[in-house]
Length: 406
Image 1 (cartoon, rainbow, N blue to C red):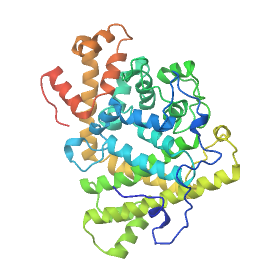
Image 2: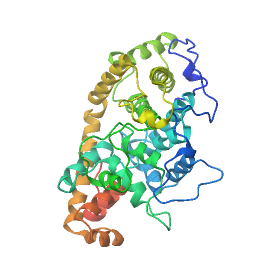
Image 3: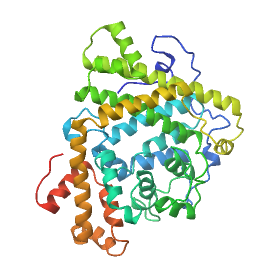
């Protein structure tokens, strides 16, 4: 993984120019930052730890959850059996958490909360990446469909069974808000798990989340646009010289070639990703600091009511990032090799759901019992959503008596 350290590499632009990034002392909090002592608390009251902040405790609960461990065997872009070097949902989440924490530290936001939201942001994903989610959403439309953010909320408030006194992980309000709204406000009528929970404990869905969640969302963008290039090069979906035609990346590729000439692929990737991520991180820091300086928020709730995101790319770089995502969609995510694999993965999800709907007794005994007492399909949806790639393939072989190659 390319390192992005706020004290060192963030100070270096692609051409080596010192940018003079100011890093706040560890633990420092600006007026706009979330403060543990001012947290809105937990749905089920608990005595807080004497040695950890409430957000640090949330982070630890996520790391120790079964949903987090399952991310190890869930697809990011490539299914796991294609190689050990490609990212999974787990390694992606760890990289996002590192970037989010770096951004938060530099801006004197709460590092623990930013890291927590980053670690939790992909908890609700199905097996087989976005292809699996699309398939599960399609077959469950008549019962509300499937959304990974909504399912993540359901996991941490209902489906995790670690504590005797309550379902879920009993996370703080700020973590739950960030989990649900890290990509922005949820406007319009809401249904499903988010609406149900919001009726019990309002997450103020129409407002922007705190700065820490906004930073986690940008860290997610930075991680995947950078690291998917890494995985795509290693997979042979495109070449180094193909990248000279890609927006935003082209200048970094040319810079590495000018400085070093032809390199071993691993070294080239390291140099490319290091400089690309540095530009993206520096841009976010500069634009976000400018937004915050102009607004002069005196407390975190004021930032939520600003009506727009405070953490952001600059307008010029945002357009480049959008163009890069478009290139990645065409040249990577829709590459024939990836598309063929994901088409077979969607068939696995669809066939399993239909089989469990037709015969709930195919589910494990505790799930089968729950299915007989719930809305038809709802329990099967939860069961499939929680599967890892390899467990889904094993269940397919068990249910249908034959293996399928993804």
